Length: 396
Picture 1 (cartoon, rainbow, N blue to C red):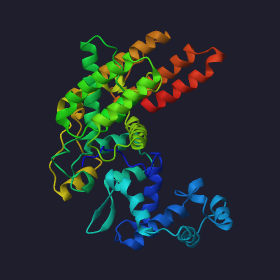
Picture 2 (cartoon, rainbow, N blue to C red; picture 1 turned 90 degrees about the horizontal axis):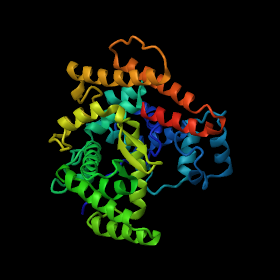
Picture 3 (tube, helix red, strand yellow; picture 1 turned 135 degrees about the vertical axis):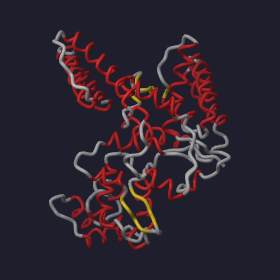
Picture 4 (cartoon, helix red, strand yellow; picture 1 turned 180 degrees about the vertical axis):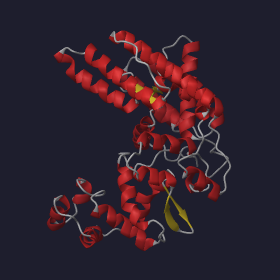
């Protein structure tokens, strides 16, 4: 049976990925046996990266264990953390460590070779002081594909042939082009459309037909004015369109979508619009996005296991299509044009800029912050200012 794809919900907060890797550092180069799988999970508890401030985890603990876990001034010993772990009486204790390990392995941050744990160059970058979480996720998602030699859940080549992140960029782009052609409002795809059509897109060859299905669904859905009839239409669409997907339950669709969108946003290549209901291509990355869509159709590559592990775990791969000088100049001109427009709106003198894209992006953000402050000086709009600034931080 087919499955909708998703990013692991083990780590709903992407920021915790680094913490999990820190807990795994002690096992770099060691055999990944049941003992170390258990010890890794214990180490997560010891460092308060797992269980701490989790009411579900703490509910079955003794008062003594609750007290030492919640007392952050007390540095937990490994023995204390083990006692807490053992008190949970897990049916398969080692499985807990394997589950916590999986998101790190899936993203190429760590890998197994000869059943030993190794932190990849991508993982070492994440452990560095100057890591950029958005850059890490972007590099990782560009390489994420089904099928692959590591993930047995999505191994059937008759079903799966896709790079999910790249395919979603293509899907949004196709929907936008169809809307423009039909004189409909261009607004990306809704979260509901992502739940039903995005996550079930498992073959790159169906990107265009899926875009057509989204437009058809949207027009029918928006034509229904009665709320109950809208719900019935959604339910019927899910049952019909997703009947072959074994894990496409209503709970999973929403849960997986929220988690995936949360991670995809960190790449800074998509953004949320329409009051938080729509996902669209980030206009400030449109030069890079267009080049990416030109050079990658979302088709999965053929790899041996070693080739795939080496590929996904290398921070320097893939070589991005805009890293050549001619493409860098296009990006420079695009950002520079935006800067000049912002300077004009702010009535400030044009600044002489160096040909450094990172510096340009930083200056652009500075100008955008100034424009927001100027636009919303009214004290009654302070909440709106805060929300807009938060959005900017997510997009830069």
